[in-house]
Image (cartoon, rainbow, N blue to C red):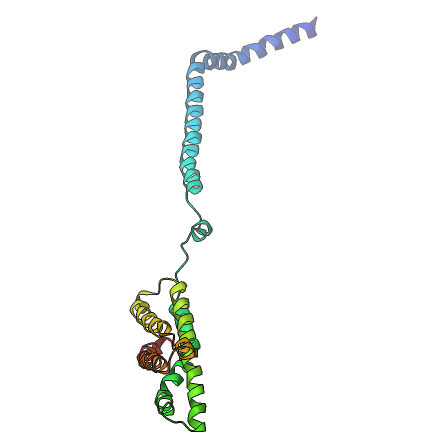
Length: 211
């Protein structure tokens, strides 16, 4: 019986000792449970608000990135540049030496037209060939300059002037006239071509900065 009584006393003592703690916990559970629960909801609400704010701030950045074209796309739609001064100058440089040589030999060819000797006749044939050649090269150069496209602003006036002179030489058709026309017609067409060739030389001088 002693152990039972001791156990009983011990149990009662333990319960008595724990009563204040139980009472305290019970008091917290009962009286403060609503406050704790309320604070928990506030914390959860704040966390959700911060998460939503982060998403909303990231969304405009994503939309901006999606709608802003990158550099490669912008480069792909760039309008190609027009022809350069060097491209126009290359057409002139191709024939410049021959055109200058023709103009330099005009006095010799004029003299040969009055010379009935063998040497004079040979010179007349050679000069007739060069008249024909300058007509063809002028035609080709005028076409190439025109088809190349709009020249740079700094060259616009010079290109127009050059094409104008070349077309005058082309339209004389001195080579054809001398083959099929009379001597007088040949002489007139050749004289006009020589005049235009002299003008062409002064135009070539204006091309020097680009050649």
